[in-house]
Length: 363
Ligand SMILES: *Cc1c(COP(=O)(O)O)cnc(C)c1O
Image (cartoon, rainbow, N blue to C red; front, side, top):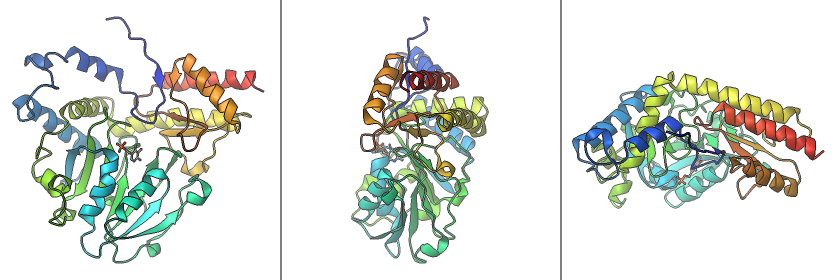
């Protein structure tokens, strides 16, 4: 097979997938492992797909070390539907929940939850354009809150929680859409974790939900059936037709991570990539990182020149060199290099070399 001519895609999502997974999926596309049909066509109730989804769950449990009292679900609707499913299921006693607003995704989640209960913001960095993770303590949380909500990695602003907030006995809910499988996480410290797949796992279409069992089963009778976690948990994500193909690719990625040394190996590679890039930015006279150093994300590296026209020129020239989607989010401008697990060091090296050349040419 000739080597495909691929760009380095620095998009925040959908983003790069491991080439070996894409090529293996391509080789099995028309005839998946000799069963005469593709995963896109087969029944979700077939023996073949049954094995795909069971293996995907087992491998995810293994690489994330998910305790037995947690359910794993493969759902649709993206991270966005979780903004509603979380309150619809977890506002189960006082109907109060406390939110930490660290970016646009956290704010959207907060606004959605406000439709369903007594929701309060206990910490926010909105006034400083979300350039850091605001501090809060257990004392800021209402003692009868049904849960506390955080967005663990802020994809747009490039910030990340560097330790799990202590919420005592109150379940902690975390949106890990853009950092799942990039660091070891003690799942037992969370009530619920969710992640849309298209950042670090698979193509868009599947959302992973990991939920402590005792938190399920409290949705109001009027909650649509599909939005009740308990339904999906009891049916092993087969209540209705699941997103078969994205689940298959997610499963292949989980297998690959296992083969490569698990999440610790991913983390080590992610740290090496991010450190190289941040070190260069810190040494540069042209590029600046607006994020508080201690809260920097390993996955989404935000930087600016301070000149919007120059930023635009950078993004356009990088594209010509085969490095695409380096523009910052449309709401913040500047640049953002998303360097998820599947971005090879080669891509980061090429980016840094280009940044140096650009700096030299635009002094
Ligand atoms: C991308 C993203 C979302 C939204 O995901 P969709 O699948 O597009 O709904 C939510 N939260 C975070 C942290 C994200 O990065």
